[in-house]
Length: 113
Length: 111
Image (cartoon, rainbow over all chains, first blue to last red):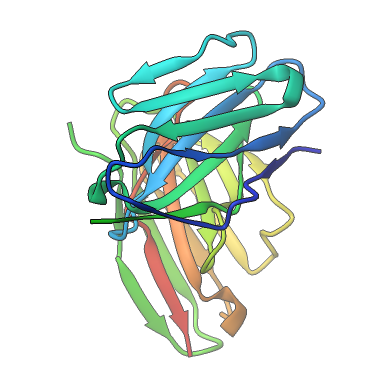
């Protein structure tokens, strides 16, 4: 069975603080894909990143960075120097072979000015 | 390049009525997915198509739900004899590779 756990329900930070969103997953598959999506107040899910199970290299994209560790089954997401526009619900998701995605319950991030 | 579109964006219906939603995927995407999202939760998978073939259905998809994707283009999701528990956001996504791109969703309210 596949499962994604986002233990942080809500996080509130002040602008310019760094914030890390945690994601822990469970799967028996050896090949799988991990994703992060952003859902702003407008409601539309926005794709941020995909990582496959064979690639543990961390990735940085501007203020965003992702830390994938198979040893702890974690795929954490860090926003550096947060901005008000980063306020949204962030979802971590897991998929095998490109079929259905299993989403976590999401973490609501509020960035205050 | 246009994204995934869904119609209608909002639907209010009375319990027991049938409703149909439409999804138009990104044109070159061969896979199309339906999800349901309730307040405070992540999206839950309902079903997906590769071209016109429906390849997987979740156990969430009761016999009141049916989805089609004729000719492998747009897709429809129909809910028959709606119940109040069907109230949710219905999301459509499409993909060509492994990442799925989502539409704006159809918010269904069953009164």
